[in-house]
Length: 347
Image (cartoon, rainbow, N blue to C red; front, side, top):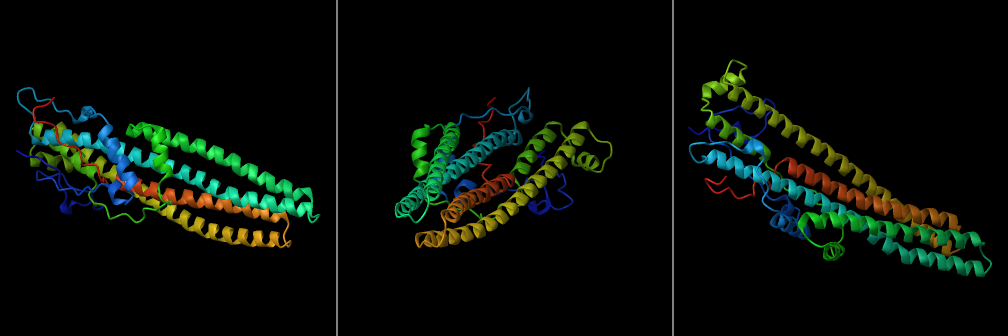
């Protein structure tokens, strides 16, 4: 007897899916790290998965077969336990990569700002020598240069720490990995990703584990139906019916929470884009006005500081979109079913 837990249309309707003795649904599981179109991310995840040792099979996925080799359902459950671990590693690599990319963006932004800030300080010095402004102007200009240089050192330290965490996940040395991160193109936002399967892969993995358990206990369809209806049934049928409902609730909640986070990140990016545009226009006007002697250094100081903060906020908002997308992609189970099945009869 082959036991499975199936659903109509392989979706998650409001009423949930019913336990049935039927063939399990096929699950499309594209690799999200490839779907992003970011070649460095795809390379890093592939390297990390290749470097990682084969994960141990979690205890719930082990079925004891004292008199014969495991059947196909049990082998599939074991394979999907391995796929779970690989999916979690891929997700950790993706999030670590985004943090490294975010901190590198701060380093780049601060470095790009140094020349302009030093130019402002030089102009302030000329104007002071000409008797047009007081030492306050040169002092403010110097303070902003100093603050930016200090912030750049802090950003480099944050970047180095983020790269070290990523290097540990993929089995690489931080030095070469830093060079790869520094050489990436301008920040991109992955949104939108291709549509993920409506049937999360983690439900398929749970389903296969329950298939193996029901088959092992020789549970019939009538007993499964009784358990779902709340009537007396074997303990295995009752437990698996409860586990199936819990798995559906958990999957639905995870996808909903990830979608909420993505919507919030999109709103944040829209706000940061508007703020950055206004800040750039303001600092451009302030620079022209100061050079023409129509604006005090105090106004330019505030405009420069605001523009730098807005650029960093915009970079952070873009990465937040990507982080939310990766969380949603993982919640939907994309890329989770890529582990090879265990060898039949293997412990």
